[in-house]
Length: 237
Image (cartoon, rainbow, N blue to C red):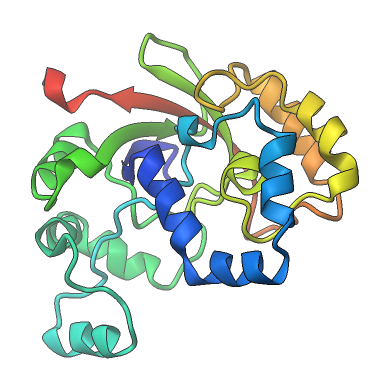
């Protein structure tokens, strides 16, 4: 399994917009109209638009260039046309790995191994200004001026984040209202990017979450890694 690489992710305000307008969230808000506003009020000190972590809809490569398979995906409701050129290039760059990972669940088909690959794919986006490149690593944490902080979540596949699922874009396990005060104190160490500054602080929050019934469960095939996130400035290259 890779320990470092690059993701092309949506900017925070677009992640939040997609979340708030998603059919699933709209349905939940209609069913529980007070739940989301109450959560936002309880954690108003944490601006969800500030989140710069991993749970930001990373660009996904095509997993095949077979026209028949692409059409099957399209008929099934999968958007196969947005950022088509960039996603095809991702497939071409890592064809062997993507086809191999189709049979695995513990590696990341969205991860680009070299910065040159990430910037090339980024240049092929339909609207590059909607995206940014981040460098991610799950070992050898070393801060630099470009370090945004440390997230906690899945290294592969859905890029789930404990931070994002708790206070940014809560989807699967919204925290119980009675723990809001306690939870806010556990999140007090978050920086301006809604990420932790030290592995120790991130580890404390992870251990807290995995003991709670309202939080996502850690499994052998869905392990929560501490992941360093660094900003990659495309305009400076």
